[in-house]
Image (tube, rainbow, N blue to C red):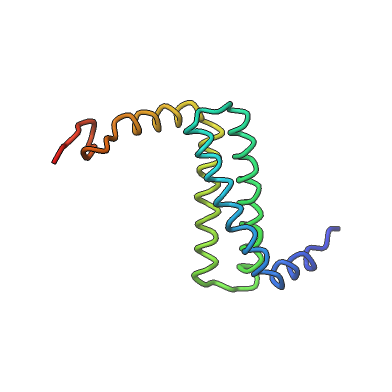
Length: 126
């Protein structure tokens, strides 16, 4: 049977290093996914980047889970869990509905104007 205790101990002993890698990596891969969508790139590229972001988010879930397993319930654990959840949600949405996301982002960018405020499809100028 697979013994998980050494892996959990490694995760808790090297928490700062793991988080120092995972947090920027999750942020950058999720941002890259959104950039690829806004640039209307090939859905294969979007899915590849979204898959990488999802894998990193799952690793963060596992890392935070090791802390929950020993009873450490603090603000940083919930913040990291929230970061992973948002990244995973964006990645799943981007890989499942890339065309819908492109259309919605295009409509928003088209309706937004630098000279006014966009509200519900109507531009209000000051």
